[in-house]
Length: 248
Image (cartoon, rainbow, N blue to C red):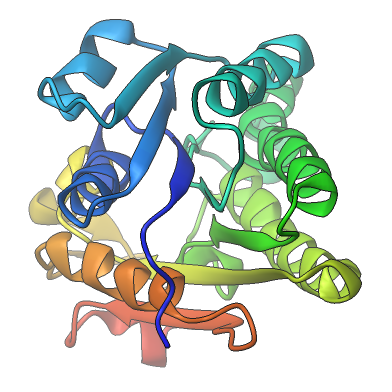
């Protein structure tokens, strides 16, 4: 039996994959708390849905994250799903060129922010009755392989894999499932530069293919629709002809 739509928190819901995933969940009947820094963008994602709760949030701020999850549970009484999607590309350059502030900012959003949200969600799912829920992390292709000059983003996304594995293991006694979706070149604001050409490991610049992000939303729909006794630990969705499989 598939999981019926319940209550969810989606971070980074104001744009890109977060917007597409949020709208898909709302279309499926989920009640969704939309988290992101820009309130106007969150309202644009929500499109006036009566199942949407807009909560402007900086995921790198522990107090703001706690307030986000209080708002969701105050509204609906429980939490069934967290989609940990918020992220930033961070500074680009060789290790000696990356400034420390940019590094800390990237770690703060991509890794610490995902941990803070997972921490709050895990506690709620562990204590609620009936117990359990699902946490889905956005790992990105960079969770497996990086790009030239991408040390900050790649390091944080590799760390998301460790976060996913740890949550999945620690969640077993409490009915908390955790999985990760890794996306390669979905056509969003973040990948707009792919159409103009991006530097490859051999130093050449290449225009890379992209694909409709609705397919990412469909993949997430599959993951979150499973009963809690089934889990997809890792799922990769990518443009068929992107150079990922032969990168290096």
